[in-house]
Amino acid sequence: MGLSMPKIATSQSIFKPSPNDAQVFKKQGDRSIPDDDSDTDTPPTKEFFVPYVQGDDTTIQAYPVARVDDQAGGGTQSASVSFMMPSDFTSLTAAYLVIVAQTGHNDWNILVSAAIAKEGDDYQADTNSDTFTPDLQTDNMEEVDISSILTTVTALDYVGIELENKRSDDQFYFLGLRVKYT
Image (cartoon, rainbow, N blue to C red):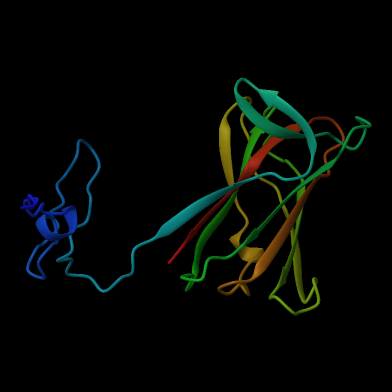
């Protein structure tokens, strides 16, 4: 006569959520987390950060950065980043270069160029560029909005961005690109 083992419940049978289960969100400290019963039809904003992929590698504190030298400095005057726009992308909210200036100036001269293409397209199917003149403070983590050159980007586009320091007397450090979208 063999012994029969008792039937053991699996996590699938015990923890299977019912269709009536609701997820509850609460306010946590100073951060409000939207609940599922939102009264607005505005899609949530999503974001991602892409670290630089090309430049004169260095670090400031613990941050790996690309040092972007001035025109007279003799070093690398450019840095770049590449990424693919996510498949759930609908529209661009903002795109920020994340920069730390070695010395503050209110008239930086940064040329930013973008190349945008889908898989199977010419790699420079769509190109845009503009010069940005932000007021950057010494040693501050700063964001420079460059979304004006990315107005044609769509879901699953490959995007390449290059920035060049056109100042003749100072350098800055480029951490990467922060992208916000719906």
